[in-house]
Length: 301
Image 1 (spheres, rainbow, N blue to C red):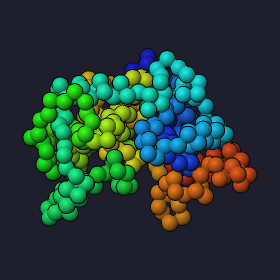
Image 2: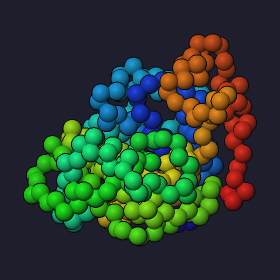
Image 3: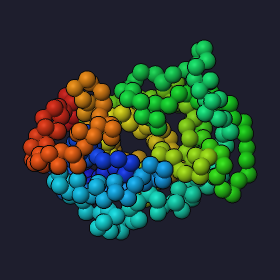
Image 4: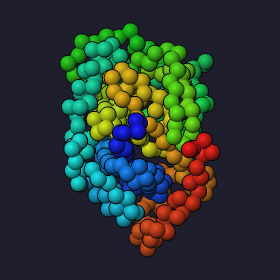
């Protein structure tokens, strides 16, 4: 980010369940970084998964995060110059990006079934992601290396529906970036990750494409999120290059775990903000709990 650029951060929850304390900690860090930099914080509702997203969770996101003390200046509930701020209303943006990737030869149709991919992943000598970063099991982050079965396929399509569309990663290319908390990061295409899905066969844009398009359209200058998405950052940088979009700064936060060292997920109902509110916890108490073990990395300036 240039010294003259106005800081624009974002929080981007998905309404697939009630937000937990781990979400709140990451979003609080995004809020604090926007406030420290006298910038703008954007609330983006990442509601593309129509099978799992629920209206009650959307309302809960707004209520719970405001109760926690987080404030945003742009979003579905307050408006702004870069809306709409719900991904379900931004399909045309994603279609335009898909067309640009198709015309540039960056993507190809993939007809592999889940069974095909599972068998490929279990085959001898199948490459797995190199252990350069944390592996927390996020489907869009640490998926098995795609073997390239459909790389030669071509399809003159006017619509992405009906097949998976994969981004053809440049074999052996290194993707380097400096994380504001974790320092220099480096990943190699086809060793650390393979050709990844940008549009699903059920006609829904994949996470990787949607966030790249939205971060650019909303002029986000820094992305604050969990460190489980480090590998996704490398994929997204490749998409940004292919689409001619700017690359924001990145700040990856440590993840919160339960008493067994397992990363918090939405199934941890006891630690949902909604349940903690019901039990009478005060937001200032929870902020102390959330931030108490947020130890800055020595590399952070």
